[in-house]
Amino acid sequence: MTVSKTAEKSSEKPADTAKGRKDAAEAQPEALQLGELSEQLGYILKRAQLKVFENFLRCMASLQLTPAQFSVLLLVEKNPGRNQTEIASTLGILRPNFVAMLDNLESRDLCARIRSTNDRRSHILVLTDKGKAVLARAKKLVATKHEARLNDLLGQANREALIAMLSKVANEF
Amino acid sequence: MTVSKTAEKSSEKPADTAKGRKDAAEAQPEALQLGELSEQLGYILKRAQLKVFENFLRCMASLQLTPAQFSVLLLVEKNPGRNQTEIASTLGILRPNFVAMLDNLESRDLCARIRSTNDRRSHILVLTDKGKAVLARAKKLVATKHEARLNDLLGQANREALIAMLSKVANEF
DNA sequence: TATTGTTATACTCTATAACTATA
DNA sequence: TATAGTTATAGAGTATAACAATA
Figure 1: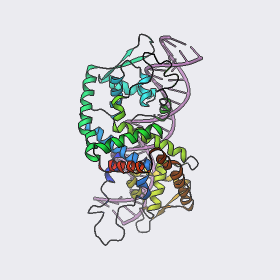
Figure 2: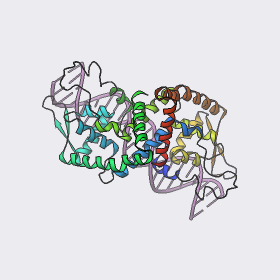
Figure 3: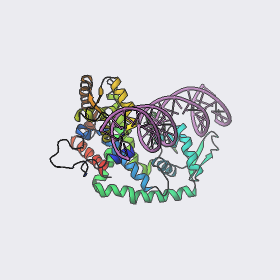
Figure 4: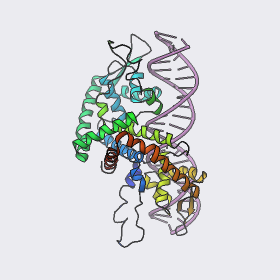
């Protein structure tokens, strides 16, 4: 919900900075009470997701890959020979919206559309050599800079528990 | 990333249904391999968030409240006497985008803008009586239908652990 | 000069209908 | 007729600049 990127930065500090808390004996300081909001599943889920995506983008700045593009490359690599509809629907991307995304990846020579010989309506998706190389570098960046950060923050065991619970929510909620 | 609502429904079943698995001794069935994607923090976080928001909207259908609107009502109730800038920035909503949102809530007589007498530039936000009543009903619906579902799925202890870890990610990642 | 609420605007995501070419 | 890829388009959500009123 809500929770914009720039605004997050501006709502980051105002809790206990010099401005927000000039004097210990002041009537109404600055910081608002979150109250029940801090226990609302949807609210913290959304804020956590925005933070994680932000960090992902920073980690991948050198490769210029968004989370969505990374997920496409991963899925195509793991499932070569599949067509656009199959890749898109697995990722929850609507076919019309997948077109521009693929145009982008193809224009950067990261993946290619190949007309299927069985069914000439289909475009089989494959990674180019450059696409494979970029994906390999992306995986390393994600592992060392992005996912490693979660380990530092929560520890290995908790990290795995978090992923497991989120998967359960995503699949069964 | 990606992961649209309608497409999620269509990519829900195709794992092991009658269609997807006609015969045990078939070459290449239907379901794609998610591979490393199923361990990607951002990916499952996003899918979980979409599922939770979807469920929230269904639970609140009778009150016609979105997660964002609910969060505004909660925060205004907990922090009466604050102005638009304070409420918006705490929620990570940019001031320009908060205007239409408030117009909506005010037109439904759920909250009101009051010109501050101290600083006549500011609009103090308050809940109307109807706003308080609707929020009270909303809280009940959220508790009994929405958050309770998480308990059923994970159990009380895990539910609290999940919320705690997500908060940590949202605040410190 | 700075801030509050606002307007206008643009860009991204997501969603639906309809076209084309193939089947 | 049905499906794959595509186009066009519309609606959210999010972002920035700039204006009027007030401080």
